[in-house]
Amino acid sequence: RIAGPVSIILLSKVVVFSVVSLSAANLGATASAAHTLLFNVFLFFCVPGDSLNQCAQTFLPPVAGILKSEKVLKTRIILTGNVIGAANVILALLLIFCFPQILTTDALVTRALQGCGALLSLVLFLHPFGISTEGILMATKEFDYLLGTYIINMLCMLGTVKLIGATGPNLSKVWISLAFMQVLRLAANMRKIIPQQMKRIPKTA
Image (cartoon, rainbow, N blue to C red; front, side, top):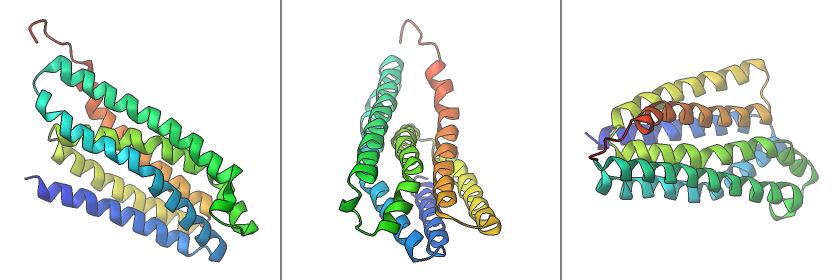
């Protein structure tokens, strides 16, 4: 009941990131190197956001059914995701624009990195927000809903990558597609969470 949907969700993430990376690999040595560095920076800053996913799955089940506590905890998790996202943006911009030599000393690669710095920042802001809402839905056992949204997300991403290839690929388009993926996930998750958070709490709860 749980293992199947979660496995497919994880598999869809692997497929999306693999296809996007393959698209970047066809851009040439400089763009491919820049994408690899950008993606490694993304993965590095993913860690705090991923921990929110685990926090949601750990702390929400014990308060399930206690409506006020559940609602407050969900709000705190999402707000924490926003704070982490903002911190990620600041640190990533400092790294890309002020200390790029930590990543590379090649001028062409540095230029390509900085050309996608704003897109990387957008992805890093959205990631903890999206992954925290995903953790909330997992904690509340909305596995079928998550499975459906990830399948749709994966199909949209595959279509986007195909469109990028047809219109002339470049590194910015690759990172626009990654930002698009984060937006889709966040929108789908919030579509489920917002009605839950808007429910009135009975006075006896």
